[in-house]
Length: 368
Image (tube, rainbow, N blue to C red; front, side, top):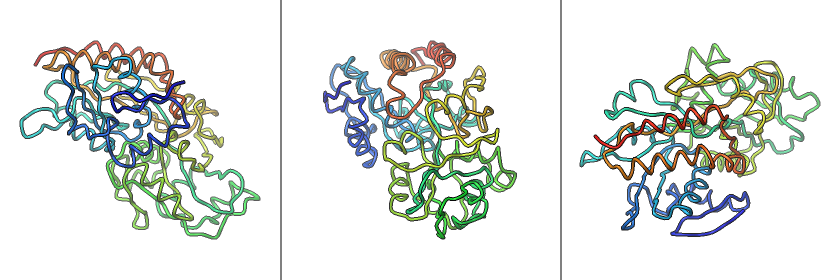
């Protein structure tokens, strides 16, 4: 265990220091203390600028800081802007025709149409995995809140509007549910967390599938309270009595939010944990392009809402030094870096997935 500051980068693998990391998320800054698009690379260093997923942010701070500590000439910045904006920056160019970022990160894998916008070709490499939990604020309710699939789908469809609804009560016998209006708190920005959650709802609810489908940005029912970023919704939940929100498992753990126990495909109520998330991912089969979703995993021990998160990379890079650093950085993340994953609330990748990711990285070549 270590906590050290070097070159303005906080190096930490300790849960006790997460306030520092969360502070960087709340200000929307990259981990160097500046936005990735504004950071000047020191003379003699090789710089990489990335942008995207809030899901990955705490883990990336650990990874990139530790990697920088051991490789001081590697200058890595990352803007926490959400998966949707991360994809847009990855495919976009600035006014000089240069790439806006060197890598993106998204919990929603790129579509074929998005990939076609990148002339150099795209590699989507699973880099970590996690779960999406339902956090809630119910003062006076003791014990663990359990939600059936019909109950939480009905809540986010806007059909279940009071915490004493019979579909909630029947899963919580003896629990003193308050007579409170349910307030759903949702992301208003393009979000991979939103995609993972709505992809699950799409799999379990015919009504959801017909009205909304799976998307990074959703036109939620009118009563939903919209706010940007995981940190924004976490703050809103803590302030709003009767609220419920979908949020990344590790972030909910660090902030200390209460989360519901959800019914899975096999009808068993399962609490989110590293083991239950790994169980949910166990049956995933990765195709050659490494784009795989597990919208409703089977297995009595499986947590029902799980997702991979991908690094978005170009297959060729005109800068040989950057191409090498990209390969070295994310190879480290897929190997040694995985041992840091459980600390901030993420789960290590299955070994078979990491091996496929490493093989994909070998396809990065310098040149036009």
